[in-house]
Length: 475
Figure 1 (tube, rainbow, N blue to C red):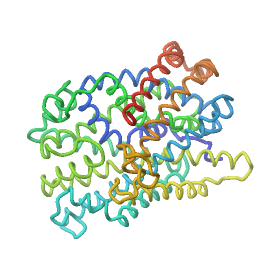
Figure 2: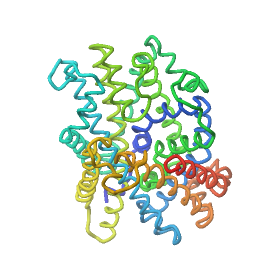
Figure 3: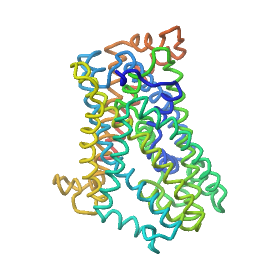
Figure 4: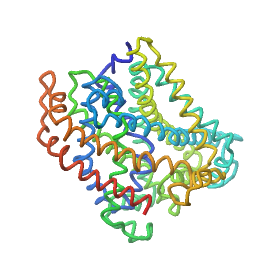
């Protein structure tokens, strides 16, 4: 079947895997969390976690996926008895993420169109309204939010329906280099603005955010560890079946160890580049604006572009286009995890190529979840989880975006990664990964490092990260 021919080239696989890792979390999450949690010290902790957890889990997931040549559910089902349920966790997590990811992708589409309107003084531009008012109007205009969200779902669906090499690889092979060069353009402009140095201090100087009153208090070590760990999982697409699924399409001659390292380095580099594109401009042109979350993208950054005049609207179009590329490259990997499982089952049962059918079905299901998040309007339209589900009011359930984020990034992804490391280290045995990473004469150079980490270090760190996530959400 075409779906199991895998990626057409090594470059195509890398762009797809890097594209999965590079997403909205890099652009609004990484630079803000870095500044709010000690600047350069956060980066050091992030890199340590990336080496001891991120790299280890990525190698493990790529190896398991390539070994079985199947999606997440069938991979765990075929390899383990105790942990076969992990595959379903890896299906549910990306599905929940897609619900709010497509909503945010729709917002990005809206804001690219908005800046086109501003450039040509059209009626679909700002029309003299402040950025906060424009954003508020969009959230309260449920029809508009739903329309843009479903357009983003349709884009994701069409790419995945095109297949691995014909859809995902083609898009990422063009989209990711474009994203990189557009980031460079925005970085040059952002870092050359008067006052941009404060944005660089926010990201890189330890304690600058606390000393200058940007945040109220310095975080403790557990908070920094939790923040860095949560960012790492969401950013690197770990613990949710994506790397298992992409690994299942990987050629046996490919060097898993080398590929995992390249993906990790590229993702971290682009996260830092996203910070250099956003934070200097924020501190230079909108020093009181939000520094994280959706409001950073859709209020603070739009304020920045408005301040720059006509040139600003051109940069606004470029900026939101690159954000859309980052969002789509991630959303297609999330949907592929779900679709791949059902495509494999259809193939096993002799039903032939059902990729387009299952892409449509999965797209409709994700569209319904996206519909709920769009209608919610970040908690402003009276249908928040605590209202519909009659839960006690808390920060994690005052809107559907945060609620789904808490379930997926906060709980399911760390749990999935924790039990995967236990599964490999203590049930399957590290030899399973060692052998897969040593195929076709490839030397697994970090074998000893991987074996020690997957059995001892990674599970311990995962427990600490998971505890920190639970503490942040519930305590």
